[in-house]
Image (cartoon, rainbow, N blue to C red; front, side, top):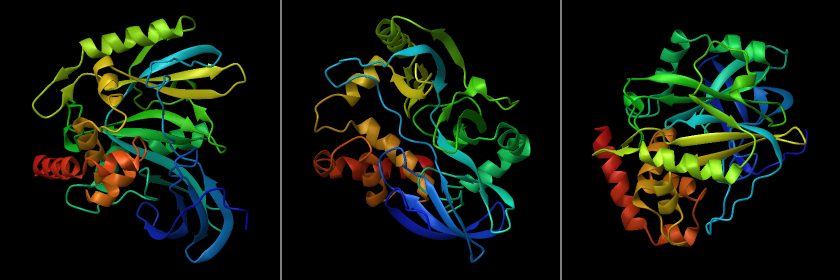
Length: 315
């Protein structure tokens, strides 16, 4: 067996899309392997270990004291950042070399209807009836990242439609990022913004300002664009993803180093539904992607309040 490149949790679960029993390890490392799968058995039979790189965490391109650090790039394409559930389409193989295509959230190997609120399998089945996702997975040769959005899958951003799926980008075998405009597909893509190739800091700050001007707060969230994702084509050929959010969201996010804004906790609670239940443990694990354990320990009262609020809104 090849050496495992990350630490993670073992799993053995039924793939609801292909009715296979799959065993392996899912990564919890907060690096390029975050959410990656290492599949070792299919239907009780050992297979050549398969490392499946998934959707990694995107970062801001500045420090808390607003020092910008843009790498050298040929150009930058910019797409809207959607606010929903991340669904990842990936391929794996059994011992006979038969290919299967399945779908996962960030921290689970397969989509599932694990609660009456987190019916992600059922919602995604609706999308598979609406769109031929398999066609693009096969023809592109990549695994694909999607966002499942709409009023039936509510997060902080409110969308004027019940449910839809958008193709965000592709992921290569080694984790390389494939921007949406390089994927031949008839699937819906995010809204594209003008490409830039100079004055990165100026354009970044202008986009923050425009995003803020068009973000409207409602009683239960916001209307507008959550932000944008910048795809930098570096001079060495790599594609680097950066996120850009409105100035007010940035200011809240980079408040006191040991402070977690309430809206961030609420958003994390919505993301926790991908695991079926919003528990303290799951919310803590997701918050650790952005904040320290010291900060989390200071905010358990706020976290409990947010958990109760999201459950009430779901009801």
